[in-house]
Image (cartoon, rainbow, N blue to C red; front, side, top):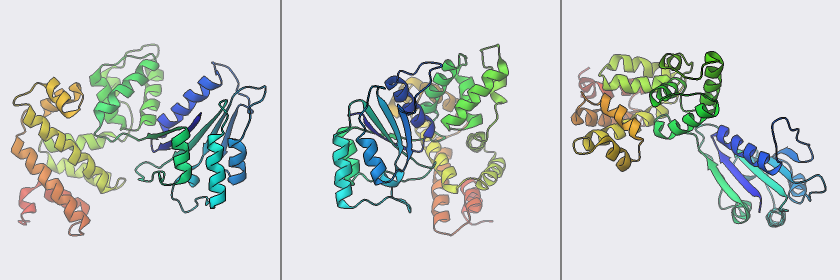
Length: 335
């Protein structure tokens, strides 16, 4: 059955998936106009309107695509739409009877960082799962460069541009992990360098964005420039939750520690295969780890664990906890 439930906090890929379905079903080509009879959008419609949409029968004008925002039906929110047992049964039966020529795309967009998700225990969720497709669209975390890199490479190629992995990594660090922001950055670069098609390192470094600070903090810690790292953390705490910074640093240093340990007996390719990282990312990490020992990485990791405990328990404010994580004398109480 052509029924879909798309949910998650990565709105860019979610919307692209919808566009792909719409273009394929309605045979959209460049310059084509879509009839409002073929493509219809609803925003958390009431019960009657939802049933009417599910029961739609296409006529001579062709297939129909419905894009229905339905977070108030599937997510636990203050303004959720409550269905009684009879209404729930009607909706679940309607899913089974959706015409093969009517494509129902239910969406549950979620704010970045929000942990909400559809309640899989609900009958309407199970009905969609049984008759259609349920797909999550999760945003990437800042430390998932190896996952973002191939996506960004695809954006660059689609734009008719060229860039090597070093340049792509610079763009990621300048812009951050948001795919929408990265896509906008590629569009901006294309206009900037036209008629050229090669993105240089210089152009990448001038790409605007606020995502570079979190990577800069990571590098400053490795370089033992703790004062500068704390300065950047202080700036980030004004606009980001401390858990976001901690999560990135803890994940990053866990990977760095594993990479360092494996590097004694394995090649970068084997480390990448063993740890699920990108080979290019492993090579970059090994370059940074040349002057950093395993003991130092363990000490930093332990400091971050203690910082999280101290913040969550209320023992220290966030910035002071980060400071103690990097300075052994303060962690031991010799202030």
